[in-house]
Amino acid sequence: MQERLLFGFIPIYGVLITLAIALGVCLCLKQEKRMGLPTEISIDFALWAVPAAVIGARLYYVAFQWPLYAPRPLRILYIWEGGLAIYGGVIGGAVGAWLFSRSKRIPFGALADLVAPALILGQAIGRWGNFFNQEAFGQAIENPAFQFFPAAVYVEGVWHMATFFYESAWDFCGFLLLWRLRKKITARGNLFFLYLCWYGLGRAFIEGLRTDSLMWGSVRVSQALSVLLCAISLIILILRHRKHKGEHPYPLSLPAAGNERT
Image (tube, helix red, strand yellow):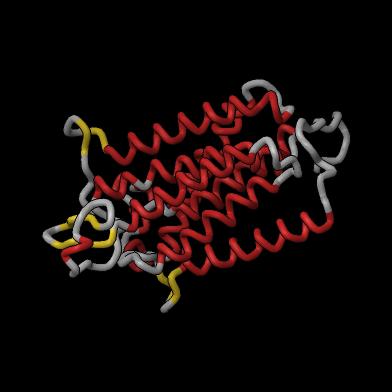
């Protein structure tokens, strides 16, 4: 990876991630009142979820690249050298969201729905960091008819599939879908399951085109996880639809002190 810098010292990838987080918080702030959540709860939520997401993204990457870190485990802390995995960030962020929901007595499903559109938009923005760092590209393209951006990206003298762009475009379409449906989907948690289904479907296909996947033996880890999450989310959505489970509509009623969390 060759990290590109803005003004000679600011990592462009870091700028994009910061922008994605800022936009995500703004989007969440716009949805709080409609969903019946406390005012500016999104800011407190971000203070829990973002650090947890960074930790999760790093640990996920290190777990499947352990031979690189085993000789010098202290390098695990050197996140400025690169090595953050999106799925690890989602898992870590989910853990942070769950802890926050327990602390504030807010249903976890409500927080998941709140962040779903912002999350997939952030992923669409963050993928452009791969463009500047010349990473996360696909197989070489030998047909001159397809040697142009955005079908391909030119890296070290060779045209490759622009898989970072494919995923960014897919994620942005997912954001438009979730944003359009956010007021129509009222069953708590369903918007987040739709996010998992949409993102998993696209990632499962695109991951198979990449040349730098995290591997577990011969298995592309993120591809297998994408298929699993997509299938589970789709089954849950279908079962909820058949049973008409809309008993937790928005705006939600927060539990009173001493009541059981949901």
